[in-house]
Length: 469
Image (cartoon, rainbow, N blue to C red; front, side, top):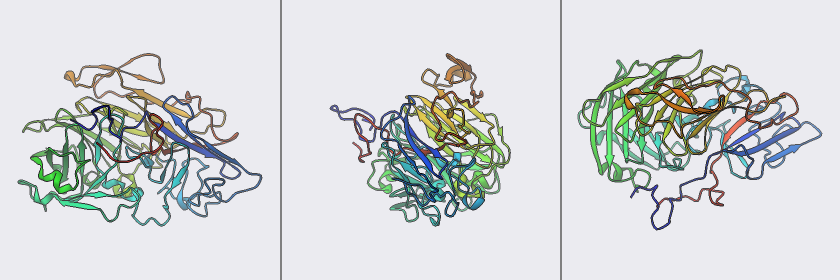
């Protein structure tokens, strides 16, 4: 029985309620505010605000966090557009689309359901936290209502596990994939760190390793009788695996894609792979259910000046999923300040079913966040002076999860009433409009910032208690 099942009335303790998210902002001189907002746009928990009659150098009141200051004396101020820029550079900023993914912590920290924020020390983190080490994390397709609570990564031919997302230097367990390969030349297919995806519903792990001189990639599929997320050791998972290898061909190759691919392992044996190279984003579905590795290429998406993982490890391509786990979105900013959003949305039941996201905003950062049962939202940090927070929502609750010979299907988005038609590989409506009704954080110019909520409340629970069935 899979972990998502109910046995004797007991539900897997990892299961969470419908998603919530954190918005915060203000002038960060004399006023600041934090809100935790549910999928229905209602406030939950105890949002926090502070007002002062004089200039405050740091976040004040309960927050009092030295990571942000009005004077830029530390990491910068989250009160300006494209904020926060570390010493006037764009390498780390709180509003960036790079902040958040499917894991229960943003690059800078997280917010509790009650509205208490925690920021990691990203001034002297020196490659310790998710900010600079998150690119090692694998992508996971989870049962409904669950986010990854164990943190697996891959570095070359070493698979590893980290205790927390704030300490990702010394793994607590490692396993050499060299001991399990069948035929591939390990030294040849070892350019970059490789990439991996895991589907808990089928207990299948797929790793990808590149050949630095060509578009050739070796995919290794591990189907285990042991769940990776409940195993005692990594060796236990790999020793219980049936292993199959495939030779794949990527659309292009280069320094970004060698290291950084989003891998969506589908229930039906197909695997969606998305990656960026230079200013283009690519996606392909590969059939790993048999022995032929048939490929379906999706339309290449061209962006403007933007950066990949070789310009900074925090620029890795992100992935997020809907609450029910049926849809996964691979995405990257359109513009290099973390603005806009280009991506591919895959069905996790059948990754041949895919759609494209194209938001060309070049003025404000944002955040991809799941909402409700089957939805995703792009929150955009556009000025809220005389406007509500700008959001585009996509709902896939009635969208066909199967490829069906690339037949058209429908989805719901917040810029139109009722179901809207979309072709396979078609572009979803991606225009961001201020229709949320959520007020801003200051009476004048104010750019909202976003942070991951580390637990989505369920049945009165307000924190993650750990463990699994």
